[in-house]
Image (tube, rainbow, N blue to C red; front, side, top):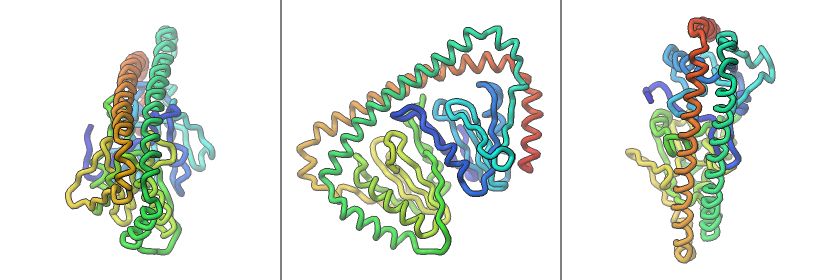
Length: 355
């Protein structure tokens, strides 16, 4: 998968403990953005269209990857005009809330030979159902892993001085987040996800967005979660654009924060996503823990980590099987698509985007 200095890569949705969780609607709520919602079947040219848009623009873009196939795109976000072109089909189905004013539908259904698809109706339906079933199994494995990791986080929290951690976060804000005027705004992105390729982290995005890296080393996430919550709140209160990266395995937990105007990032490092960059500032969250209180629970914590790793490996295996079925679907649809008509629709969209 290519990366370049002018663009950054994120996910905007992933399979989590409760099934697929997406942040596409939150993207649509960002002030001033215009959405172009592509509707079509699998293998009908959506990802290729978005990849070409990303390559045509002269400005830095955000490439939004599909967590079920990180080599495929679910979207591309352009800064000028401030617009997003998104795959608006399941599992992240999007329909216009303000048709024409804030969103436009780009339908590619007219490019499909429906007679040819109907001739393979039984096989296509079976493959869609198989994909859904396998992704459901992956979600159950992820849910079990998330429960174990949450148990470890609660255990670590019971041995931590949370007031000390909160006070430390306030001191960090004084150092790194000077007060400024204006109203803060928030963007939600995912830097990592459980995928068919394992636990995928877009590491190249970090130096692309930030020069100053503050890294919280926290295996269990109890103290780093509080630090991130505090810094997020203070960043917004002080008028900054905050890019919040939630943990895909835990509802409400923040893994990373970016403040693009300051070229600053606060990152969480652990065995799931270790962070090692030149000149990063390292903060070890053991400074907030009573080590003697955790020592007697080390066996339990080790068990949780190993069992969670096995469960997440099984989740990735289920996603690999789902992707294989999805590839079969793409073959059916790809054989039934008039790609010259797709190219014409892409050219019309490019004209609207001024590309």
